[in-house]
Length: 366
Image (cartoon, rainbow, N blue to C red):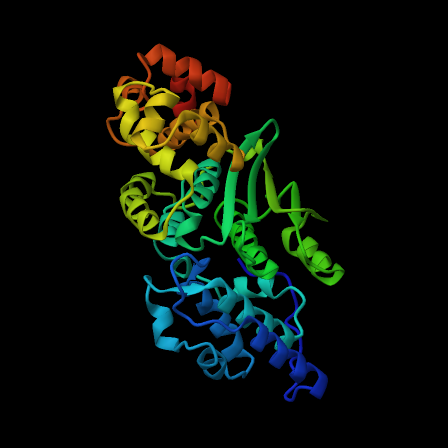
């Protein structure tokens, strides 16, 4: 997972102009560590790689934390969530101190699965590339509610997209850090030669673009959101050391964490669908009643997240396929029941639509 970047040389003393910029940045972005739950927040575990980086460079990380009302020991808690204004200020201060235009990439060297809490453990359990990318976007809110994430499978490409939520201002390098962790995970556990087709970044300078191109080994462009794309031909490839059964067992923990963190409507609906599908495919009207809203309001909320009801049903079914297909003793009839199909033949037709083969052929190929 190591980035192919040469660590920048850090000066032992800061020039006056840079010190002034740091003070201004800290004052502008300083916020209490425990703000109201309505403020965008990030899991404190996310700051651990930053502390390791600062320690490695001989910088006083504890003093930086203290300015924002934080202590190193608190960052070991999987339950603590810190205001995004604080994490952004710390990251910007570290970027200036290290003179590193791509600090989000450098942080990957100091990252482990535990950095992302239960989501990191679930990612360690692996699965197919498709399943892992979908899991990242589905449960990303456990790590931060300042960013909306989306997974989409297009002809020729698997797409993971990250965009700031309305009213949130996560640091661009923090999103780059998450994308770099995705790229490192794929390279480490799937193939050293599997690079993204395309990487899109927002609010970064030319030096960062160049560093990102070297890291990802692919074309990197600027855009309105951040996106990483992989070839769809690798969608069914299993990460080395995958344990689908363990990944399925960890779903309950991820759902519980997601409930605590708050979640977008599409995720709320997807979780409701998982429990409801064994009774048959529900209608939009049934979903609206279950969530205490109107059909029109529900469609509008889904549209704001660039989703449709039909797409949500298909995505939920495919997530269930990835989770349960390899379970010991799972028959296609049982799987069709879990997915809300009337019979196994309906499931096979859906498989051909999704993967180009029948469910039996898909399972043998996997």
